[in-house]
Length: 395
Image (cartoon, rainbow, N blue to C red):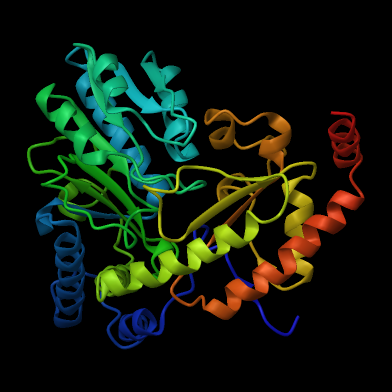
């Protein structure tokens, strides 16, 4: 393999040069514990607080509302479990989410159901959108929290977050959003969009793996996720992942530098990829095109399975996905694609291509050269495809 065309940036991203440079001093000379009182400890504390301020600025939040975590999954767990358990004492044991959330939310809700909580899983449209009216109808006097993802990790659809947040604010229900895929690709302002809690992850925006954030609006009090020391104002114990926190601060600032130009470039590459792949017969774009991440392409190819596509693409130097990286070991069809109405067979033949800042037009051209050939080869070996063609000829 002479060259890797990496088209799986929704799974993880390469650490950028600027992030790595920002991190290096805190991995070598400036290694003090941020909780220590001597000089190199306090230098580390100052670095953590500078990163906190950078994250807050990117989200339109206050620094004291930013809590560093280990990843987006931890942030999601903390937000939903922390709110549910805190409000259960007031008789609020009802949770609202959507049917196509990331498993970090769905499995968290399923865990809480075992503790006696009731969960409403809202449907989504065939194009992959949550209707705010459905949220409003589902809210009850005993609703503790609503959690709706900002942008879907598989099909890239961007939800009407400000409207859902407004409804929750009027109903006096806490609103959390998993914004792991949205941060860096969408402008976010937690105040203007009525967001009470927001999760993000560093490794989706060219920071390292192992660091995330939970934004908690001032005035929202949830149970601690971990107990121990006084870190993160006693709400999330454990010695801070210093270098990665610094890296995340740099990465989120980079993500919103020259933002409009970046989005325009990514959108052009995305649209070229979508339009080219839809030229292949018996394909469909999954998720609406209008309110969609500028980096996301999700296409289903009838008559074949996604695993075969991925293996052949890998042999040709293209890294892609058939869905969420967190479920790549599962043989079940994507719950996201089933939620938008795809049958099992079509859902099995899906391909997710996710662009990043290091992708070029040459990468897209290469993908458009290779993928049609791979699809043709797999269909030639597929009895399902052969049967489809026979039935089509009869009709």
